[in-house]
Length: 251
Image 1 (cartoon, one colour):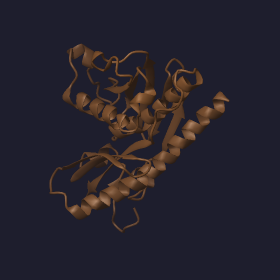
Image 2: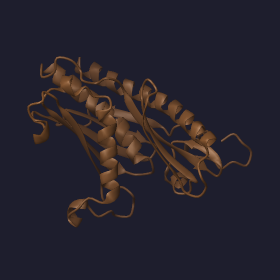
Image 3: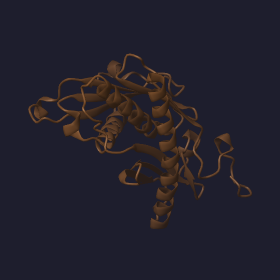
Protein backbone atom coordinates (compact mmCIF):
# COMPACT_ATOMS: atom_id res chain seq x y z
CA UNK A 1 0.00 0.00 0.00
CA UNK A 2 1.26 3.39 -0.88
CA UNK A 3 -0.56 5.39 1.76
CA UNK A 4 1.49 6.43 4.76
CA UNK A 5 0.70 4.34 7.81
CA UNK A 6 -1.18 1.71 5.82
CA UNK A 7 -0.67 -1.93 6.76
CA UNK A 8 1.51 -3.84 4.33
CA UNK A 9 -0.41 -6.52 2.44
CA UNK A 10 0.90 -9.97 1.63
CA UNK A 11 3.47 -9.89 -1.19
CA UNK A 12 3.71 -6.11 -0.72
CA UNK A 13 0.62 -5.63 -2.88
CA UNK A 14 -1.23 -2.43 -3.62
CA UNK A 15 -4.95 -2.27 -2.88
CA UNK A 16 -5.86 -3.20 -6.46
CA UNK A 17 -3.35 -6.04 -6.93
CA UNK A 18 -3.97 -9.78 -7.00
CA UNK A 19 -1.83 -12.23 -5.14
CA UNK A 20 0.65 -14.05 -7.43
CA UNK A 21 -1.55 -16.30 -9.55
CA UNK A 22 -0.51 -19.36 -11.54
CA UNK A 23 -2.67 -21.88 -13.40
CA UNK A 24 -1.06 -25.18 -14.42
CA UNK A 25 -3.19 -26.90 -17.08
CA UNK A 26 -3.42 -30.66 -17.51
CA UNK A 27 -2.40 -31.33 -13.92
CA UNK A 28 -4.45 -34.56 -13.78
CA UNK A 29 -3.85 -36.77 -16.81
CA UNK A 30 -6.80 -39.01 -15.94
CA UNK A 31 -9.38 -36.20 -16.14
CA UNK A 32 -10.99 -34.95 -19.35
CA UNK A 33 -9.69 -31.49 -18.39
CA UNK A 34 -7.84 -30.23 -15.33
CA UNK A 35 -5.90 -27.37 -13.79
CA UNK A 36 -4.03 -26.63 -10.59
CA UNK A 37 -4.63 -23.02 -9.61
CA UNK A 38 -2.46 -21.19 -7.07
CA UNK A 39 -3.52 -17.79 -5.78
CA UNK A 40 -0.95 -16.81 -3.21
CA UNK A 41 -0.99 -19.61 -0.63
CA UNK A 42 -4.41 -20.89 -1.78
CA UNK A 43 -4.16 -23.94 -4.03
CA UNK A 44 -7.02 -25.85 -5.65
CA UNK A 45 -7.07 -28.83 -8.01
CA UNK A 46 -9.90 -28.44 -10.53
CA UNK A 47 -10.94 -31.35 -12.75
CA UNK A 48 -13.63 -31.72 -15.41
CA UNK A 49 -14.92 -35.25 -16.08
CA UNK A 50 -17.33 -35.97 -18.94
CA UNK A 51 -19.95 -38.71 -18.79
CA UNK A 52 -22.19 -39.76 -21.68
CA UNK A 53 -25.40 -39.36 -19.72
CA UNK A 54 -27.53 -36.69 -18.08
CA UNK A 55 -29.72 -36.61 -14.95
CA UNK A 56 -32.99 -38.48 -15.46
CA UNK A 57 -35.00 -35.27 -15.42
CA UNK A 58 -33.04 -34.07 -18.50
CA UNK A 59 -33.08 -37.31 -20.52
CA UNK A 60 -34.40 -37.05 -24.06
CA UNK A 61 -34.15 -33.27 -24.30
CA UNK A 62 -31.00 -33.23 -26.41
CA UNK A 63 -29.23 -31.03 -23.88
CA UNK A 64 -26.33 -31.55 -21.48
CA UNK A 65 -25.61 -30.53 -17.93
CA UNK A 66 -22.73 -29.10 -15.88
CA UNK A 67 -22.50 -29.57 -12.14
CA UNK A 68 -19.84 -29.15 -9.46
CA UNK A 69 -18.53 -30.60 -6.23
CA UNK A 70 -16.21 -28.84 -3.79
CA UNK A 71 -14.21 -30.05 -0.84
CA UNK A 72 -11.34 -29.10 1.43
CA UNK A 73 -8.66 -31.65 2.24
CA UNK A 74 -8.23 -32.33 5.97
CA UNK A 75 -4.93 -30.42 6.29
CA UNK A 76 -5.88 -27.56 3.97
CA UNK A 77 -6.35 -25.07 6.82
CA UNK A 78 -3.57 -26.23 9.16
CA UNK A 79 -5.94 -27.49 11.83
CA UNK A 80 -7.26 -30.82 10.55
CA UNK A 81 -10.72 -30.61 9.01
CA UNK A 82 -12.85 -33.73 9.34
CA UNK A 83 -13.84 -35.26 6.01
CA UNK A 84 -17.48 -34.90 5.03
CA UNK A 85 -17.62 -38.66 4.40
CA UNK A 86 -16.69 -39.29 8.03
CA UNK A 87 -19.57 -37.11 9.24
CA UNK A 88 -21.92 -38.69 6.74
CA UNK A 89 -23.11 -35.36 5.33
CA UNK A 90 -21.87 -32.19 3.66
CA UNK A 91 -21.64 -29.09 5.80
CA UNK A 92 -23.64 -26.02 4.82
CA UNK A 93 -20.62 -24.08 3.55
CA UNK A 94 -19.59 -26.90 1.22
CA UNK A 95 -23.10 -27.16 -0.24
CA UNK A 96 -23.28 -23.39 -0.75
CA UNK A 97 -19.91 -23.21 -2.51
CA UNK A 98 -20.41 -26.16 -4.84
CA UNK A 99 -23.79 -24.78 -5.87
CA UNK A 100 -22.14 -21.43 -6.57
CA UNK A 101 -19.46 -23.07 -8.72
CA UNK A 102 -22.00 -25.09 -10.69
CA UNK A 103 -24.43 -22.26 -11.44
CA UNK A 104 -21.55 -19.89 -12.27
CA UNK A 105 -20.10 -22.21 -14.92
CA UNK A 106 -23.55 -23.01 -16.32
CA UNK A 107 -23.85 -19.30 -17.18
CA UNK A 108 -21.33 -19.72 -20.02
CA UNK A 109 -22.50 -23.08 -21.44
CA UNK A 110 -24.72 -23.80 -24.44
CA UNK A 111 -26.40 -26.98 -23.19
CA UNK A 112 -27.67 -27.95 -26.63
CA UNK A 113 -24.14 -27.80 -28.08
CA UNK A 114 -22.95 -29.98 -25.19
CA UNK A 115 -25.34 -32.76 -26.21
CA UNK A 116 -26.75 -35.32 -23.80
CA UNK A 117 -23.71 -35.58 -21.58
CA UNK A 118 -22.74 -34.27 -18.15
CA UNK A 119 -19.50 -32.55 -17.20
CA UNK A 120 -18.66 -32.85 -13.52
CA UNK A 121 -16.41 -30.14 -12.10
CA UNK A 122 -14.56 -31.23 -8.96
CA UNK A 123 -12.69 -28.60 -6.96
CA UNK A 124 -10.47 -29.93 -4.17
CA UNK A 125 -8.71 -27.41 -1.93
CA UNK A 126 -5.15 -28.47 -1.12
CA UNK A 127 -4.34 -25.36 0.89
CA UNK A 128 -6.58 -22.50 1.97
CA UNK A 129 -5.58 -18.91 2.63
CA UNK A 130 -8.74 -17.10 1.61
CA UNK A 131 -10.62 -16.97 -1.68
CA UNK A 132 -11.03 -20.72 -2.22
CA UNK A 133 -14.43 -20.42 -3.91
CA UNK A 134 -13.15 -17.77 -6.29
CA UNK A 135 -10.02 -19.77 -7.11
CA UNK A 136 -12.23 -22.82 -7.67
CA UNK A 137 -14.44 -21.01 -10.19
CA UNK A 138 -11.46 -19.51 -12.01
CA UNK A 139 -9.61 -22.84 -12.18
CA UNK A 140 -12.76 -24.81 -13.00
CA UNK A 141 -13.32 -22.66 -16.08
CA UNK A 142 -9.89 -23.66 -17.38
CA UNK A 143 -10.59 -27.33 -16.65
CA UNK A 144 -13.97 -27.05 -18.39
CA UNK A 145 -12.45 -25.32 -21.41
CA UNK A 146 -9.80 -28.03 -21.74
CA UNK A 147 -12.44 -30.75 -21.40
CA UNK A 148 -14.50 -29.19 -24.18
CA UNK A 149 -11.46 -29.07 -26.45
CA UNK A 150 -10.66 -32.71 -25.62
CA UNK A 151 -14.22 -33.71 -26.54
CA UNK A 152 -13.93 -31.79 -29.80
CA UNK A 153 -10.67 -33.55 -30.50
CA UNK A 154 -12.34 -36.96 -30.24
CA UNK A 155 -15.28 -35.87 -32.38
CA UNK A 156 -17.73 -36.08 -29.48
CA UNK A 157 -18.50 -32.37 -29.90
CA UNK A 158 -18.88 -30.54 -33.20
CA UNK A 159 -18.14 -27.20 -31.57
CA UNK A 160 -17.28 -25.86 -28.16
CA UNK A 161 -20.34 -25.30 -25.96
CA UNK A 162 -18.63 -22.41 -24.20
CA UNK A 163 -20.36 -19.09 -24.85
CA UNK A 164 -17.80 -16.94 -23.05
CA UNK A 165 -15.18 -16.86 -20.34
CA UNK A 166 -15.67 -16.70 -16.59
CA UNK A 167 -13.60 -15.89 -13.51
CA UNK A 168 -14.17 -14.88 -9.90
CA UNK A 169 -12.35 -12.77 -7.33
CA UNK A 170 -12.85 -11.62 -3.77
CA UNK A 171 -12.71 -8.04 -2.56
CA UNK A 172 -13.72 -6.19 0.57
CA UNK A 173 -13.48 -3.24 2.90
CA UNK A 174 -10.68 -3.71 5.42
CA UNK A 175 -9.81 -0.91 7.82
CA UNK A 176 -12.03 1.41 5.80
CA UNK A 177 -10.22 0.68 2.52
CA UNK A 178 -11.38 -1.24 -0.53
CA UNK A 179 -9.00 -4.11 -1.25
CA UNK A 180 -8.82 -6.71 -4.03
CA UNK A 181 -8.22 -10.44 -3.52
CA UNK A 182 -8.35 -10.85 0.25
CA UNK A 183 -6.14 -13.41 1.94
CA UNK A 184 -7.33 -15.06 5.15
CA UNK A 185 -5.90 -12.42 7.50
CA UNK A 186 -7.77 -9.69 5.61
CA UNK A 187 -10.96 -11.68 5.08
CA UNK A 188 -11.22 -12.51 8.79
CA UNK A 189 -11.12 -8.84 9.80
CA UNK A 190 -13.04 -7.29 6.89
CA UNK A 191 -15.93 -4.93 7.52
CA UNK A 192 -17.34 -6.00 4.15
CA UNK A 193 -16.52 -9.22 2.32
CA UNK A 194 -17.55 -9.75 -1.31
CA UNK A 195 -17.13 -12.40 -4.00
CA UNK A 196 -17.72 -11.38 -7.60
CA UNK A 197 -18.22 -13.75 -10.53
CA UNK A 198 -17.95 -12.09 -13.91
CA UNK A 199 -17.76 -13.01 -17.59
CA UNK A 200 -14.89 -11.91 -19.77
CA UNK A 201 -17.06 -9.24 -21.41
CA UNK A 202 -17.94 -7.71 -18.03
CA UNK A 203 -21.30 -9.36 -17.34
CA UNK A 204 -22.04 -9.99 -13.67
CA UNK A 205 -22.99 -13.62 -12.96
CA UNK A 206 -23.10 -13.39 -9.18
CA UNK A 207 -22.22 -10.87 -6.47
CA UNK A 208 -22.07 -12.06 -2.87
CA UNK A 209 -21.51 -9.18 -0.45
CA UNK A 210 -21.86 -9.23 3.32
CA UNK A 211 -21.40 -6.32 5.71
CA UNK A 212 -19.93 -7.68 8.92
CA UNK A 213 -19.86 -4.51 11.04
CA UNK A 214 -21.08 -1.50 9.10
CA UNK A 215 -23.67 -1.28 6.29
CA UNK A 216 -22.30 -1.35 2.75
CA UNK A 217 -22.80 1.96 0.97
CA UNK A 218 -23.62 2.19 -2.73
CA UNK A 219 -20.38 4.09 -3.28
CA UNK A 220 -18.35 1.31 -1.65
CA UNK A 221 -20.21 -1.32 -3.67
CA UNK A 222 -19.37 0.49 -6.90
CA UNK A 223 -15.75 0.74 -5.79
CA UNK A 224 -15.61 -2.99 -5.03
CA UNK A 225 -17.15 -3.91 -8.38
CA UNK A 226 -14.61 -1.74 -10.18
CA UNK A 227 -11.79 -3.44 -8.25
CA UNK A 228 -13.23 -6.85 -9.09
CA UNK A 229 -13.50 -6.02 -12.79
CA UNK A 230 -9.81 -5.11 -12.90
CA UNK A 231 -8.86 -8.27 -11.05
CA UNK A 232 -10.96 -10.51 -13.29
CA UNK A 233 -9.31 -8.99 -16.36
CA UNK A 234 -5.96 -10.12 -14.94
CA UNK A 235 -7.35 -13.57 -14.09
CA UNK A 236 -8.69 -13.91 -17.62
CA UNK A 237 -5.19 -13.28 -18.95
CA UNK A 238 -3.87 -16.08 -16.70
CA UNK A 239 -6.65 -18.39 -17.93
CA UNK A 240 -5.87 -17.64 -21.56
CA UNK A 241 -2.19 -18.31 -20.97
CA UNK A 242 -2.97 -21.69 -19.35
CA UNK A 243 -5.34 -22.70 -22.15
CA UNK A 244 -2.79 -21.67 -24.80
CA UNK A 245 -0.09 -23.61 -22.95
CA UNK A 246 -2.26 -26.74 -23.03
CA UNK A 247 -2.98 -26.29 -26.73
CA UNK A 248 0.73 -25.88 -27.47
CA UNK A 249 1.56 -29.03 -25.51
CA UNK A 250 -1.08 -31.00 -27.40
CA UNK A 251 0.08 -29.82 -30.83
